[in-house]
Image (cartoon, rainbow, N blue to C red; front, top):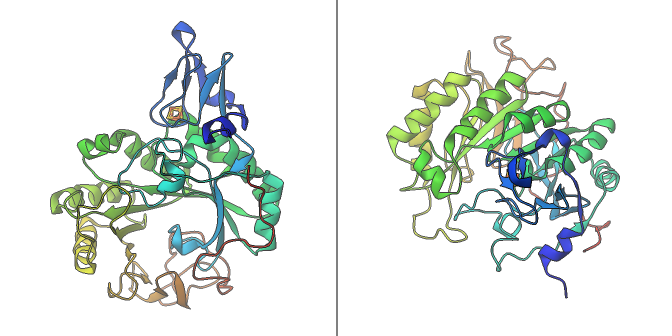
Length: 373
Ligand code: SF4
């Protein structure tokens, strides 16, 4: 019985030329994420899914770790086609190793023997056909870190764009200039997890803060629609000073970038901190408002955070979108994406009309199951 790593070794393609550079002593530098690993012959990168063999950097290809249909609000994107169905695929592996990861079965599949997630054979055509069949409007690479499988995501996104669908990444933001330039022509939406504003915390998770801040600035400059999420973990990143610096940084890039502060629940190997309370989320939201952010949302605690699930016009406070969890209960933007009260353009990517929701809770695609490898 082959191991998961042995199965995946057979499912690769050569890395995109834009994302590799031969360096000294026969090594190849990978630029698909902020680690920029110098990989010798026969070795793997930190993510464990990209490896050098016979002088070529091999990257994941031809499978998914899983597929799920999510309301776009779950990603979360609150300013991009509310109510749309996001056909969401994950790969395996990650370049960080957060002990509280809520997708650890896929993200840590090659690092943690308890994380078992059999991959499924897939092609861009089959995935996009399935997405269209289900009425999805967006195809999203999520559940593990999409940057480490950028070539495969771009192949799927080309097919999705050709079929009239939008595309997105749900990412930790540990990118490089090269990978952002590489995905830029093919991507519409990007969510960055800004996990902390302390480099020491990032190093505990296996990264550094600077590449993440670079990614946020660059995505905004590039005009890719960006929303940012911070999972609020008591005792880890909920200090008032850290939250002030974090939200002031986002506001310095643009006060109109939506910031979602979401509730931690005990998971994976991080079981010490208490769960985040709605009051903690509301305190963090107040700090964000004071920092100048105009669109602040609290997540993972439906109905318990006052107005912090709704969208209000940043100019006149007219209630534009009402939500309960992922469910859209009212939608009042104009066809032009403006406030009906004062005519202000609301930042985001809006449809001309609200088409209702196919689902306000996630579901599995069902009938046409992909073959397990
Ligand atoms: S994706 Fe990141 S972790 Fe993986 S090999 Fe490339 S630089 Fe290293």
